Every structure is written in C-alpha cells, then in structure tokens.
Length: 150
Image 1 (tube, rainbow, N blue to C red):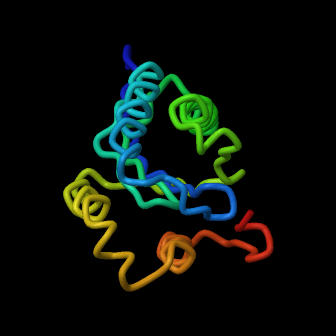
Image 2 (spheres, rainbow, N blue to C red):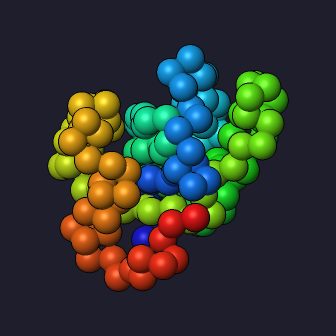
C-alpha cells in the first residue's frame, strides 16, 4: 500500500488540579476555541470540546503523524499558559497530571458529541470522579484509585 491511512477518534478527559472548580462559564468558550486551535496546529482537529468548571472533555481526530501523549501534553501545557494570562484569578492554574483517553468508533461520534454537550445535566447526578471511574470501567482500563487523582 502506497499510503498510510488512519482515523483515530479520541475522547479525552482530564480535570483541573485537585478538581478545583475554577473554569467559569465566562472563560470556557474562549478556552475551548484556544484548545481547538492547538489541536488544529497538531493536525488533530477537534470535533467538540466541552466540560464543567472542574474538567474538560474533548472529542478529536488524532493525527496519524503524532502520538497521543505529545498532543495531550501540548494541549494541556499551552492552554494552561493561556489561562494564566487570560484571567488574573487563574495565575496559579494547573491541570491534573494525568488524563483519560478512550477510542471512539465512528458509529458512536453522535452519541459522544451529545454526551459532551449535555455535561451540565449529567453532572447534576454525578461527580467528575464518579463519571471518570465509569469511563475507566466501561473501557476496561485497570487503575489504582491512589494514583488517579491529584
């Protein structure tokens, strides 16, 4: 085969350091747009970005030329710097150290998009930690509770 072809859809989830609820509604749209720009620069376009004051969900197409860890590192590092400059109250802002990244079938993109769009309703019933544990269990990711949260 002369070409390398791939389509890797990723649902990325990560929180603020110690799940601090510091991403208020006034900054989130600009933050999401900034993250979308970073992803585009890494040839990994965002499909949808959403979240809550304490965490982020991103559905994106991972470039066949980039590693997941490098793209996530750049999105978190660059958006952290941007947040510190954009909002005086966030000068000490940090993302959590880790993240969850889950593969998505093309047939499930619409479902994942709706899930990300409906975060506020979803989190009336469960915390970020409950949500994240469910993702890990659903995707059969082994984890040690002591090392998941920071």
